[in-house]
Every structure is written in C-alpha cells, then in structure tokens.
Image 1 (spheres, rainbow, N blue to C red):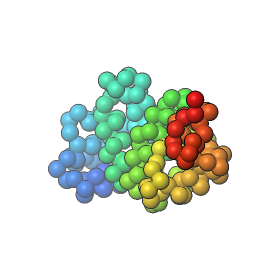
Image 2 (cartoon, helix red, strand yellow; image 1 turned 45 degrees about the horizontal axis):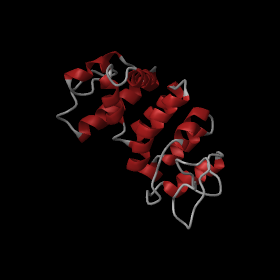
Image 3 (tube, one colour; image 1 turned 30 degrees about the vertical axis):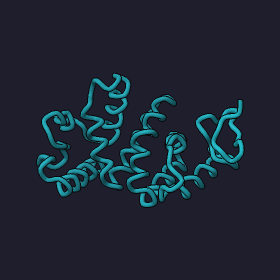
Length: 184
C-alpha cells in the first residue's frame, strides 16, 4: 500500500506543479484531482482502481464515471504517471475490445506525447504482460512520429508486424503501383 500512496502523492505533486489552479490540495494519500466532478477520486487508492473505473466508463458508453477519463487524461500529462496508468489499464482489460479502446486512446496519447522517453518502460512491461503487448500493437502511429522506428521494431519483435507495413485493409491488401489502394 505504501507504493500506491507514494504514486498518488507524486502524481498530485506533479499535477499541482503543472496547473496549480486546476488541482485542489488534499491530504497525503488522497487523490483529489481538481474540480468537484472528480471527487470520486478521493475513494481510490491505486492506479488499478482508476483503470477499472476507466473501463466501466467505456462500458457505460461514456455516460458513467466520466471522471475516470479525466483522471487518466491528467495522468498522461507526465511520462511516469502515464506509463503506470497505461500498464494498469492494459492489465485491467478482459477483452480485446477493451484493449483496443485503451490502445487507441491512452497508449497512443502517451506515445505521441512522450514517445522515446516512455517506450522502454512499456517494452519492459510487455516482456511479462501479453495485454501490454497487445495494447502496444493496437496503436496507430505515423511514420514521422519520433517513436515510430522503435515502436515498429518492437512490433516486429512481438510478431505483430510482417515484412511490409500493415493496413486497415490488411486482409487482401497489396500495394498497387506503390499506392495505398485495395486491389479488387
């Protein structure tokens, strides 16, 4: 439990430093991220709790527990907290659609925001977590993203990448005159 308390205290300190007006003060170990609509955070003690609430938000079709989405977004403003919440999110997933949701949101945002600074930590987690590997494979990056070459290499390593770039039309997709078109 000490690790959770340290994590929350570090996160609160960093978020207050970045935007002192937005994040309210709290006592040690209580996570009170900002505005009154985020007060449910007071009851949460671990990144795992936040991750589970974020998935409930997804399953409610984005109507319940909106604060969880805001909290995850706030955590993605720092590389350290972003890595911790992304790992917790992937590990909380029980289905591929949840992993896709996590990949297309928090993982993409973290990699685009902090790229090379966070990929090694995510790769270390991926060594022991298939869910983290799958979440990383669901990320869509542009070739000009700074993290793209290292991410692509990781996808090759984990067997998610073939000799050619993948396409959303990967089944039956072949380059035609060096253009990204689908053959009939």
